[in-house]
Length: 325
Figure (cartoon, rainbow, N blue to C red):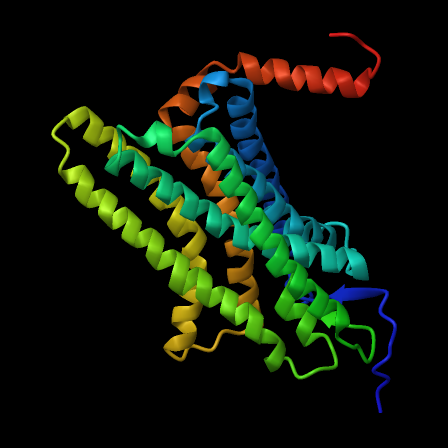
């Protein structure tokens, strides 16, 4: 009989073992991850260094950029180390931490998109009262509450995962540490442990997503009532940017669920492919959309002096800590 009191020091990740072009995939993930850091870093740099952009909508964009960096880092670093450095073993607490921040990012991205939809709804429906209702302090408070909810929910999930027993050296058949892979690697019947993740998925897909869609439906109707063509064009551009970001996040999840519902059985490779796309594409698209389609950010991006000075200050500070700039 297997020893259920096996002391776990680490996990072995085997999700890429069957692939032939592991180095190529590793480089693609590395390049994607670097672009994610660059794009979101530029957004943060532009908004933080320009006082004219210290407004609720841009605070929400900053929040999304921070979440994107955390979300992609929690899984990309593991995949890159497995594929390029060929380090297939990850320590127990590193795996638990990766799982924690991955699912925390998943939840906070969804709530960030909800806040952004509400922000646009108020801006169009109540334009004269917008600045009184949506203030910087209230926006920061709402962002704090979304993070607090995320910490509480994922903290509970992590405590459950941390308590499951293992019979042997646990093997993760997926490409990084997340809740399903850790539960399936344990010596337990996995089905009862999937109740909480299923409830979270239902909340995100059947609660938050329809709410956001209804919000944008109201926005679309309101935009058609605008008499000023310039305002109408601006609102359409802003809302379309948000919709691109929204569907880049939800599309992989909806495709996976839809395929399952119509009876398509996905093999491990296909599941891992969807998992990688869902983890890397949204954080890559988000900064691209806001850099190219948001007028104020695009304008500041054209004048890169502030970002260049900020990066120069940072680099010089790292190379010469005692240097006064």
